[in-house]
Amino acid sequence: MRILAAALAVALVLLQYRIWVSDDGIRGVERLQHAVGAQQKLNAQLTERNSRLQAEVEDLKSGTAAIDELARSDLGMVGPDETFYQVVEPPPAGSRPVAAGTAPGK
Image (spheres, rainbow, N blue to C red):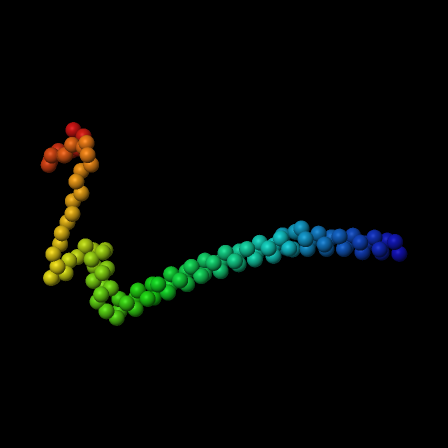
């Protein structure tokens, strides 16, 4: 009877070890829960991005205001009834102006 009780105790210890310590037990479950949480966060971000892109597509399909805005910002286009002004920043104080046709620093 003692041998059977000892065998059962050893089996119980081995099973508890597998549940609490091995990668298939509690540690594995916690690792997977962390991975699921990270994936859910990424999915939420991607869903938000998809919604914004879908709204932009609908805006581009429905009217010309979005197309005009993209043409101005991305391509630098000017409408037929608009005037283009370019503002040139003055050189920083203490720097010499570069003459046309010469390389800077010479």
